[in-house]
Image (tube, rainbow, N blue to C red; front, side, top):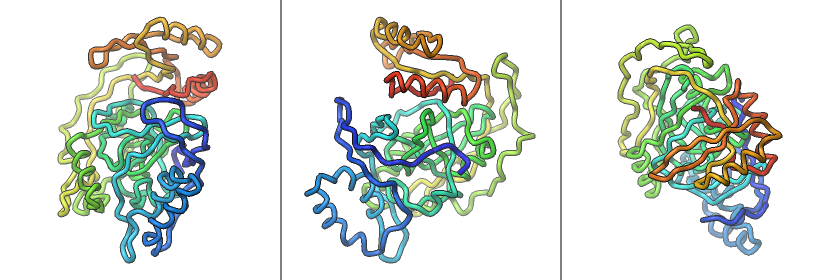
Length: 348
Protein backbone atom coordinates (compact mmCIF):
# COMPACT_ATOMS: atom_id res chain seq x y z
CA UNK A 1 0.00 0.00 0.00
CA UNK A 2 1.58 3.24 -1.15
CA UNK A 3 -0.17 5.60 1.26
CA UNK A 4 -0.08 5.65 5.02
CA UNK A 5 -3.71 4.92 5.82
CA UNK A 6 -4.84 2.35 8.36
CA UNK A 7 -8.16 0.53 8.61
CA UNK A 8 -9.16 -0.09 12.19
CA UNK A 9 -12.22 -0.62 14.38
CA UNK A 10 -13.34 1.54 17.28
CA UNK A 11 -11.93 0.55 20.67
CA UNK A 12 -15.16 0.83 22.62
CA UNK A 13 -14.37 3.86 24.80
CA UNK A 14 -17.56 5.84 25.52
CA UNK A 15 -17.91 8.89 23.33
CA UNK A 16 -17.52 12.34 24.87
CA UNK A 17 -20.71 14.33 25.37
CA UNK A 18 -21.79 16.28 22.34
CA UNK A 19 -24.52 16.61 19.72
CA UNK A 20 -25.30 13.23 18.26
CA UNK A 21 -22.70 11.41 20.35
CA UNK A 22 -23.42 7.73 20.75
CA UNK A 23 -21.60 4.84 22.37
CA UNK A 24 -19.59 2.77 19.90
CA UNK A 25 -18.53 -0.75 20.81
CA UNK A 26 -15.45 -2.60 19.63
CA UNK A 27 -15.72 -4.37 16.28
CA UNK A 28 -13.33 -6.53 14.28
CA UNK A 29 -11.59 -5.13 11.22
CA UNK A 30 -13.60 -5.73 8.10
CA UNK A 31 -12.77 -8.82 6.08
CA UNK A 32 -12.91 -9.34 2.37
CA UNK A 33 -15.99 -11.42 1.49
CA UNK A 34 -19.41 -12.38 2.83
CA UNK A 35 -21.44 -15.46 1.86
CA UNK A 36 -24.14 -15.13 -0.76
CA UNK A 37 -26.92 -16.13 1.66
CA UNK A 38 -25.84 -13.54 4.23
CA UNK A 39 -28.38 -10.98 3.06
CA UNK A 40 -31.22 -13.33 3.96
CA UNK A 41 -29.93 -13.50 7.54
CA UNK A 42 -29.38 -9.78 8.15
CA UNK A 43 -32.62 -9.13 10.03
CA UNK A 44 -32.20 -12.18 12.26
CA UNK A 45 -28.55 -11.44 12.98
CA UNK A 46 -29.15 -7.81 13.84
CA UNK A 47 -32.01 -8.80 16.14
CA UNK A 48 -29.78 -11.29 17.89
CA UNK A 49 -26.92 -8.84 18.21
CA UNK A 50 -29.24 -6.26 19.70
CA UNK A 51 -29.88 -8.63 22.60
CA UNK A 52 -26.18 -8.53 23.41
CA UNK A 53 -25.76 -4.77 22.97
CA UNK A 54 -23.87 -5.08 19.71
CA UNK A 55 -26.07 -2.93 17.51
CA UNK A 56 -23.26 -0.36 17.16
CA UNK A 57 -20.94 -3.08 15.93
CA UNK A 58 -23.56 -4.28 13.48
CA UNK A 59 -23.94 -0.75 12.12
CA UNK A 60 -20.23 -0.14 11.65
CA UNK A 61 -19.10 -3.54 10.41
CA UNK A 62 -21.68 -6.28 9.83
CA UNK A 63 -24.11 -4.09 7.93
CA UNK A 64 -21.20 -2.81 5.85
CA UNK A 65 -20.53 -6.37 4.70
CA UNK A 66 -24.07 -7.60 4.24
CA UNK A 67 -26.20 -4.75 2.93
CA UNK A 68 -26.17 -4.60 -0.83
CA UNK A 69 -25.10 -8.21 -1.40
CA UNK A 70 -27.16 -10.11 -3.94
CA UNK A 71 -27.39 -13.75 -4.89
CA UNK A 72 -25.78 -13.38 -8.31
CA UNK A 73 -24.43 -9.84 -8.70
CA UNK A 74 -21.82 -7.63 -7.06
CA UNK A 75 -22.55 -5.40 -4.04
CA UNK A 76 -24.71 -2.41 -4.94
CA UNK A 77 -23.97 -0.19 -1.95
CA UNK A 78 -26.25 2.01 0.12
CA UNK A 79 -26.42 5.52 1.60
CA UNK A 80 -24.64 5.91 4.92
CA UNK A 81 -23.60 8.58 7.36
CA UNK A 82 -22.98 6.51 10.49
CA UNK A 83 -22.46 7.04 14.20
CA UNK A 84 -19.49 8.63 15.99
CA UNK A 85 -16.60 6.20 16.29
CA UNK A 86 -13.13 6.12 17.77
CA UNK A 87 -9.85 4.96 16.23
CA UNK A 88 -6.49 5.18 18.00
CA UNK A 89 -7.86 7.53 20.64
CA UNK A 90 -9.38 9.98 18.14
CA UNK A 91 -13.14 10.43 17.79
CA UNK A 92 -14.73 10.95 14.38
CA UNK A 93 -18.22 12.42 13.93
CA UNK A 94 -19.72 11.56 10.53
CA UNK A 95 -22.17 14.10 9.15
CA UNK A 96 -23.98 15.04 5.97
CA UNK A 97 -22.05 18.04 4.72
CA UNK A 98 -22.57 19.56 1.27
CA UNK A 99 -20.39 22.61 1.98
CA UNK A 100 -17.22 20.72 2.89
CA UNK A 101 -14.05 22.50 1.72
CA UNK A 102 -10.83 21.62 3.56
CA UNK A 103 -7.10 21.38 2.97
CA UNK A 104 -4.69 18.81 4.34
CA UNK A 105 -2.61 15.77 3.48
CA UNK A 106 -3.85 12.99 1.19
CA UNK A 107 -2.59 9.41 1.15
CA UNK A 108 -3.58 6.51 -1.11
CA UNK A 109 -4.59 2.87 -0.78
CA UNK A 110 -4.93 -0.02 -3.17
CA UNK A 111 -3.64 -3.61 -3.27
CA UNK A 112 -4.37 -4.52 0.35
CA UNK A 113 -8.07 -3.62 -0.05
CA UNK A 114 -8.70 -4.36 -3.74
CA UNK A 115 -12.06 -6.12 -4.28
CA UNK A 116 -13.07 -5.78 -0.63
CA UNK A 117 -16.28 -4.12 0.49
CA UNK A 118 -16.24 -0.43 1.24
CA UNK A 119 -17.92 1.13 4.27
CA UNK A 120 -21.18 1.65 2.36
CA UNK A 121 -21.21 -1.81 0.82
CA UNK A 122 -19.74 -1.14 -2.61
CA UNK A 123 -16.80 -3.09 -4.00
CA UNK A 124 -13.47 -1.27 -3.81
CA UNK A 125 -11.54 -1.09 -7.06
CA UNK A 126 -8.03 0.33 -6.78
CA UNK A 127 -8.20 1.33 -10.45
CA UNK A 128 -11.46 3.28 -10.09
CA UNK A 129 -11.78 6.95 -9.16
CA UNK A 130 -12.88 6.59 -5.55
CA UNK A 131 -11.75 7.73 -2.12
CA UNK A 132 -12.19 7.21 1.62
CA UNK A 133 -13.02 9.98 4.10
CA UNK A 134 -13.53 9.71 7.87
CA UNK A 135 -16.74 11.76 8.16
CA UNK A 136 -18.40 12.65 4.82
CA UNK A 137 -21.69 11.05 3.81
CA UNK A 138 -21.34 7.95 1.62
CA UNK A 139 -21.49 8.16 -1.31
CA UNK A 140 -20.54 11.72 -2.16
CA UNK A 141 -18.70 13.38 -5.02
CA UNK A 142 -15.63 15.53 -4.34
CA UNK A 143 -13.04 17.44 -6.30
CA UNK A 144 -9.50 16.85 -5.05
CA UNK A 145 -6.78 19.29 -6.09
CA UNK A 146 -3.10 18.54 -5.61
CA UNK A 147 -1.78 21.86 -4.29
CA UNK A 148 1.77 20.89 -5.21
CA UNK A 149 1.26 20.52 -8.98
CA UNK A 150 -2.21 21.92 -9.70
CA UNK A 151 -3.73 18.66 -10.94
CA UNK A 152 -7.41 18.20 -10.07
CA UNK A 153 -9.84 15.28 -10.48
CA UNK A 154 -13.34 14.30 -9.38
CA UNK A 155 -13.70 11.27 -7.08
CA UNK A 156 -16.54 9.24 -5.57
CA UNK A 157 -16.23 8.90 -1.78
CA UNK A 158 -17.56 5.48 -0.75
CA UNK A 159 -15.32 4.36 2.14
CA UNK A 160 -14.12 5.32 5.62
CA UNK A 161 -10.54 6.32 6.38
CA UNK A 162 -7.74 7.23 6.49
CA UNK A 163 -7.07 6.70 10.20
CA UNK A 164 -3.43 7.68 10.27
CA UNK A 165 -3.29 10.92 12.28
CA UNK A 166 -3.15 13.95 10.09
CA UNK A 167 -4.48 12.48 6.86
CA UNK A 168 -7.47 14.22 5.30
CA UNK A 169 -8.47 11.74 2.59
CA UNK A 170 -7.39 8.34 1.25
CA UNK A 171 -7.46 8.06 -2.54
CA UNK A 172 -7.51 5.00 -4.77
CA UNK A 173 -4.28 4.00 -6.48
CA UNK A 174 -5.59 5.24 -9.85
CA UNK A 175 -6.58 8.57 -8.34
CA UNK A 176 -3.11 8.99 -6.85
CA UNK A 177 -1.58 8.28 -10.26
CA UNK A 178 -3.68 10.95 -11.95
CA UNK A 179 -2.97 13.46 -9.21
CA UNK A 180 0.74 12.73 -9.52
CA UNK A 181 1.63 11.53 -6.03
CA UNK A 182 1.51 7.73 -6.20
CA UNK A 183 5.29 7.33 -5.92
CA UNK A 184 5.63 10.01 -3.25
CA UNK A 185 2.84 8.52 -1.12
CA UNK A 186 1.30 11.76 0.16
CA UNK A 187 0.36 15.18 -1.20
CA UNK A 188 -0.96 18.51 -0.01
CA UNK A 189 -4.53 18.71 -1.25
CA UNK A 190 -7.78 20.62 -1.19
CA UNK A 191 -11.00 18.58 -0.93
CA UNK A 192 -14.30 20.16 -2.02
CA UNK A 193 -17.71 18.49 -2.02
CA UNK A 194 -19.59 18.98 -5.29
CA UNK A 195 -23.03 19.73 -3.89
CA UNK A 196 -25.32 19.03 -6.85
CA UNK A 197 -23.62 15.76 -7.79
CA UNK A 198 -23.43 14.64 -4.16
CA UNK A 199 -27.12 15.30 -3.53
CA UNK A 200 -27.94 13.32 -6.65
CA UNK A 201 -25.93 10.23 -5.68
CA UNK A 202 -27.32 10.44 -2.14
CA UNK A 203 -30.91 10.44 -3.43
CA UNK A 204 -30.22 7.50 -5.72
CA UNK A 205 -28.43 5.56 -2.98
CA UNK A 206 -31.42 5.95 -0.68
CA UNK A 207 -33.49 4.35 -3.44
CA UNK A 208 -31.09 1.44 -3.76
CA UNK A 209 -29.93 2.67 -7.17
CA UNK A 210 -26.24 3.10 -6.52
CA UNK A 211 -24.35 0.71 -8.77
CA UNK A 212 -22.76 2.91 -11.45
CA UNK A 213 -19.57 1.93 -13.26
CA UNK A 214 -16.68 3.39 -11.23
CA UNK A 215 -15.16 4.91 -14.36
CA UNK A 216 -16.83 6.00 -17.59
CA UNK A 217 -15.87 3.29 -20.12
CA UNK A 218 -15.68 5.91 -22.88
CA UNK A 219 -13.32 8.22 -21.00
CA UNK A 220 -9.75 8.54 -22.26
CA UNK A 221 -7.21 6.50 -20.34
CA UNK A 222 -4.54 8.79 -18.96
CA UNK A 223 -1.10 7.80 -17.79
CA UNK A 224 0.23 8.75 -14.39
CA UNK A 225 1.38 12.35 -14.13
CA UNK A 226 4.89 12.62 -15.64
CA UNK A 227 7.19 14.35 -13.20
CA UNK A 228 8.94 16.25 -15.99
CA UNK A 229 5.79 18.24 -16.79
CA UNK A 230 4.94 19.23 -13.22
CA UNK A 231 5.49 22.87 -12.28
CA UNK A 232 7.43 22.97 -9.03
CA UNK A 233 7.75 26.08 -6.87
CA UNK A 234 9.74 26.76 -3.72
CA UNK A 235 7.73 26.82 -0.50
CA UNK A 236 9.95 29.37 1.22
CA UNK A 237 9.93 32.07 -1.46
CA UNK A 238 7.04 32.95 -3.79
CA UNK A 239 7.81 32.24 -7.45
CA UNK A 240 5.85 33.08 -10.60
CA UNK A 241 3.96 30.19 -12.12
CA UNK A 242 3.09 29.53 -15.72
CA UNK A 243 -0.48 30.29 -16.86
CA UNK A 244 -2.79 27.33 -16.45
CA UNK A 245 -3.87 25.45 -19.57
CA UNK A 246 -7.53 25.55 -20.54
CA UNK A 247 -9.43 23.14 -18.23
CA UNK A 248 -10.66 19.91 -19.77
CA UNK A 249 -14.36 19.20 -19.28
CA UNK A 250 -16.57 17.43 -18.43
CA UNK A 251 -15.27 15.92 -15.21
CA UNK A 252 -18.06 13.41 -14.69
CA UNK A 253 -20.64 11.60 -16.79
CA UNK A 254 -24.23 10.56 -16.14
CA UNK A 255 -24.89 6.84 -16.39
CA UNK A 256 -28.11 5.35 -17.86
CA UNK A 257 -29.37 5.06 -14.28
CA UNK A 258 -28.89 8.81 -13.84
CA UNK A 259 -26.00 8.44 -11.40
CA UNK A 260 -22.72 10.34 -11.55
CA UNK A 261 -19.58 8.40 -12.45
CA UNK A 262 -16.25 10.25 -12.17
CA UNK A 263 -14.16 9.93 -15.30
CA UNK A 264 -10.41 9.97 -15.80
CA UNK A 265 -10.10 13.62 -16.81
CA UNK A 266 -7.52 15.83 -15.15
CA UNK A 267 -7.99 19.56 -14.86
CA UNK A 268 -4.82 21.63 -14.59
CA UNK A 269 -4.75 24.81 -12.51
CA UNK A 270 -2.02 27.20 -11.41
CA UNK A 271 -0.29 26.55 -8.11
CA UNK A 272 1.04 28.89 -5.45
CA UNK A 273 3.37 28.20 -2.53
CA UNK A 274 1.72 26.55 0.48
CA UNK A 275 2.72 25.98 4.10
CA UNK A 276 1.90 23.16 6.50
CA UNK A 277 0.52 23.85 9.98
CA UNK A 278 -0.83 21.80 12.86
CA UNK A 279 -4.05 23.42 14.03
CA UNK A 280 -4.56 22.48 17.66
CA UNK A 281 -7.94 24.16 18.08
CA UNK A 282 -10.25 27.04 17.15
CA UNK A 283 -12.20 29.11 19.68
CA UNK A 284 -14.75 31.89 19.59
CA UNK A 285 -13.27 33.28 22.84
CA UNK A 286 -9.73 34.63 22.61
CA UNK A 287 -8.86 33.78 26.21
CA UNK A 288 -9.45 30.07 25.53
CA UNK A 289 -7.12 30.21 22.54
CA UNK A 290 -4.48 31.93 24.67
CA UNK A 291 -4.70 29.20 27.31
CA UNK A 292 -4.16 26.49 24.73
CA UNK A 293 -1.24 28.34 23.20
CA UNK A 294 0.40 28.49 26.62
CA UNK A 295 -0.24 24.77 27.23
CA UNK A 296 1.48 23.92 23.94
CA UNK A 297 4.69 25.79 24.82
CA UNK A 298 6.60 22.56 25.64
CA UNK A 299 5.92 21.32 22.09
CA UNK A 300 6.88 24.47 20.25
CA UNK A 301 5.90 28.07 19.55
CA UNK A 302 2.25 28.46 18.59
CA UNK A 303 0.49 31.42 17.04
CA UNK A 304 -3.09 32.66 17.24
CA UNK A 305 -4.77 33.84 14.06
CA UNK A 306 -8.27 35.19 13.64
CA UNK A 307 -10.66 34.09 10.93
CA UNK A 308 -14.36 34.70 10.26
CA UNK A 309 -16.75 31.87 9.44
CA UNK A 310 -20.40 32.67 8.64
CA UNK A 311 -20.08 36.00 10.42
CA UNK A 312 -18.49 34.59 13.60
CA UNK A 313 -14.89 35.31 14.60
CA UNK A 314 -12.73 32.33 15.55
CA UNK A 315 -9.24 32.27 17.02
CA UNK A 316 -7.12 29.45 15.63
CA UNK A 317 -4.16 28.06 17.53
CA UNK A 318 -1.53 26.80 15.11
CA UNK A 319 2.01 25.48 15.20
CA UNK A 320 4.09 26.16 12.12
CA UNK A 321 4.81 26.68 9.33
CA UNK A 322 6.45 23.25 9.28
CA UNK A 323 9.11 22.07 6.86
CA UNK A 324 7.63 18.69 5.90
CA UNK A 325 4.78 16.25 6.33
CA UNK A 326 7.03 14.14 8.57
CA UNK A 327 7.63 17.06 10.92
CA UNK A 328 3.91 17.84 10.93
CA UNK A 329 3.21 14.22 11.87
CA UNK A 330 5.54 14.45 14.85
CA UNK A 331 4.05 17.73 16.05
CA UNK A 332 0.50 16.44 15.61
CA UNK A 333 1.23 13.30 17.64
CA UNK A 334 2.60 15.48 20.47
CA UNK A 335 -0.45 17.76 20.40
CA UNK A 336 -2.83 14.78 20.51
CA UNK A 337 -0.93 13.33 23.48
CA UNK A 338 -1.59 16.65 25.22
CA UNK A 339 -5.29 15.85 24.95
CA UNK A 340 -6.15 17.89 21.86
CA UNK A 341 -7.59 14.98 19.87
CA UNK A 342 -9.36 17.31 17.41
CA UNK A 343 -6.04 18.69 16.20
CA UNK A 344 -5.30 18.28 12.51
CA UNK A 345 -2.79 19.09 9.79
CA UNK A 346 -3.84 21.87 7.43
CA UNK A 347 -2.29 23.42 4.34
CA UNK A 348 -2.50 27.17 3.88
